[in-house]
Amino acid sequence: MSEDKTLEFMAIAMKYFPEAKAQLEANGIPFSMEMAAPFMDLFKKVMQEAYELGKSDAQQ
Image (tube, rainbow, N blue to C red; front, side, top):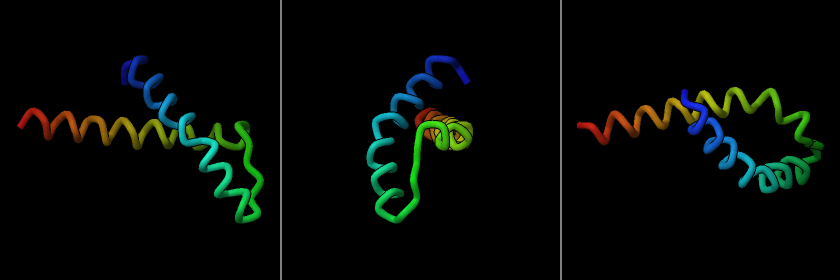
């Protein structure tokens, strides 16, 4: 994955972080950036796969 895409994916994640944090905390689950770190690799994998799928679809 290119560094540019990684940065774009992280920007998307940060855009929605406050909403995710609020939803978790509303359900009694405290959440912080430190807790989010392990999920960021998973998020990047999901975003990369979605990107590749969209790219493939666009080329057809």
